[in-house]
Image (cartoon, rainbow, N blue to C red; front, top):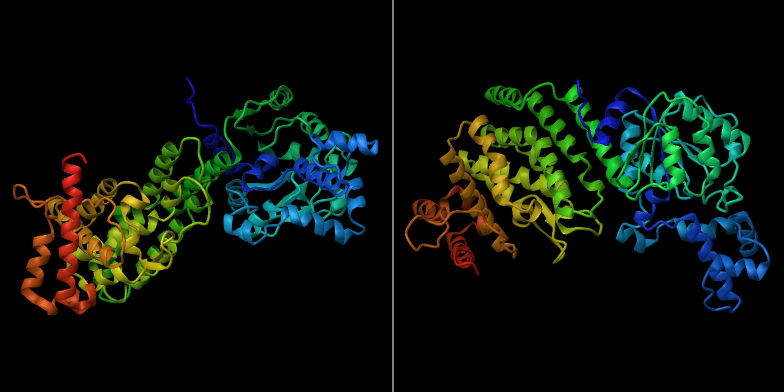
Length: 569
């Protein structure tokens, strides 16, 4: 029988379910966040020496140093010459490896998506050992953010007395030292040619007893590390080596000796996809034995009793926590093909939010003032922006879960006529406007066109929630969608926000460019005036005068947009 062709991250995720792995991170795992490589630091130190001595531009710093001082540069010599104490060495190196205020604002020198994905794998118990050739401590930072306090080996002396490997939550081994222990730092070919015996012995155990996947490491310069991997004769578990560029000849030979798999991907993407796949499989296996339909049925039963339903509260809380923990915020936010990556992430997000949106819609439709806070208060956290550069579509997608919850709840409240809940959805949760500054109602800012790129797609995404789980007919669902969207546009106008691309039909009369729900709202206000529940709950300032003034502007703007679209302008 022919085998099926699975993506490498899927194969690795399956291996991680039952096997403990070590990950080897090279410079490529850290450079993406602006962290200098060991070579960059050495070159910079030499350039500073040359500048201080008045040599000006030196061209090749290493060659200049060798000519000037008659020996090849090394960290020991450089640091001894530039500083007079251990504290001085640490202070000098911290300027390279620790972020300043500007770095933090720009998201530089912070754990990358790869580091955080490794931490997720460690938290799942699948990665027990992190080997790194880097001097930075980004791996430790990411692990601590995930609630794991790692055991750290940054000097061969740290290996003595090390507890049995299987007993450690996570072990981080700095193969070439780290910046907090300057005397341990290795960089030159001579320094990287051989490891101390105790480090070799530790690596022999790791490569024999654990699976291995490699990312961000070229394998070109680290002779001692190549030898350690090569001399392990056992092939207990699959080996994977991710690099966006073709491997060098020495790396190919090493991978061949391990009978491993080459993955044409960078560290952020490959490790992130692996962590996503492992989480998805664990979700199916442990957390999601029920279908969405069963969960909704349970929610309806809980709400029938007329009292606060603890079981529904707990279901909502689990789903909200699950969506909040999705790796959308981990990046990376740059991609060679951002459109393809956006589609992949959005498709995964739609699958992961299916149950949450069904539960929120059910609770907003059948619930009461006591159940509204169970989901309403999470919209602000789900809609928080990330501080990073990158593709705008990928950055905006981080806030899409908030949009999805706003629309699921708002459409449900509109369909049921739960006006106080609808007003709270439109006005209470706030979101940061990164362009203008300050905060505005999240419903005004985080429309589907902005956060996902398509309001039509979100309408299709939510349709089964209402037609299958809440038993609305297709026409009733579209009416509820458009009425909520129209009220949301009024909120956006009053908050000074652009409309994006509103997904509302034209009124059916020939040559009319009014939005379809405009007459519905006019009839509501004509009937009840200031006593309409929308206005009594503070919508649009709480008066018909303010509401109708905003309505006139929205109708005019909608007409202009629709005319341009109709005539291809």
